[in-house]
Length: 64
Image (cartoon, rainbow, N blue to C red; front, side, top):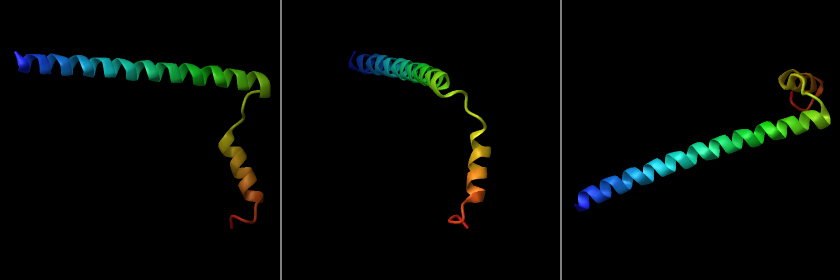
């Protein structure tokens, strides 16, 4: 009986942990999407960030 309780208890805790992880992942993705939408509304859409960094980096003498 004790082995079964430990097994099913561990199985239940693992299931709850997996469900909590999925819930946190979904909430963080939704929050990121909402934040990006608000930032796009306020500041406009982003251009290619990597290309912009290369342009800025080419002008800087301190990186050479």
